[in-house]
Image (cartoon, rainbow, N blue to C red; front, side):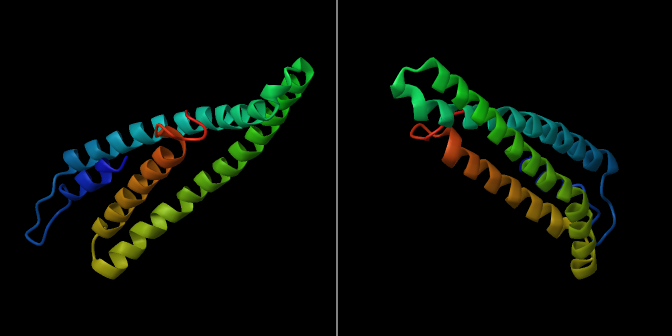
Length: 141
């Protein structure tokens, strides 16, 4: 997701015209495909994280009823977190067009917005790696 908007800037028209619509659309298709994969992985990761954290709280008790309750609590918390995540994601439908409009208004091109999106997506990769993917992560996904 971080690479596609940055690559799309190469296909924007310059001061001498030009640009390449096919390349620009292809980069957005790559972005949309990556966004779908990212969305799916996020909504798969959230329940695993909450279930794992709740199971760890009762793991030393060796109590099947407590483990089952921990799984239910984890599922309930995961549902709430996924709802919040979906609400924040829906805000993108408002924010992204506003970012394009602001970029075009301030610079005359959507290039600044595309660069911002690339940096944002890169920060998401780093946050996910830091909290969930690195070797010493508290909850590995």
